[in-house]
Image (tube, rainbow, N blue to C red; front, side, top):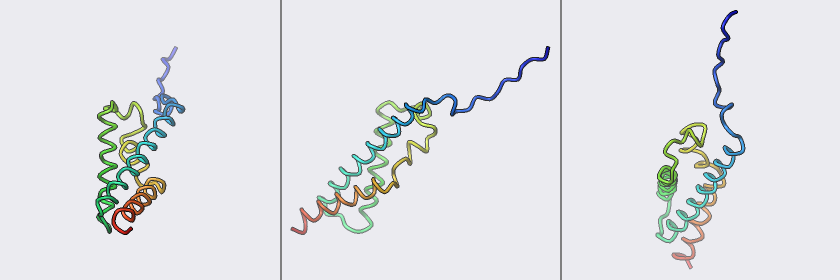
Length: 113
């Protein structure tokens, strides 16, 4: 009798889709919240032009650091790869437009009116 070959286990077989989706939703919510708060702060500070987008990306980097410090020291346990933790939702239209909206609203409230 020939020994059975062991099949390679794929990452998709080990991931619970409901938990994975919940983790991505939590990360997306955190990114949107950070974008809104960063937009408010940048608007109040009066930053204009392309320099304001630097602060958006710095805030999103701080979001990754916060997730890492909160307990996501091994992102492959919660996400498919590091790329999901680093880049998921950073360039999404919802995050960018929320940032721009609150940036412009608070800039206008504090510096124009």
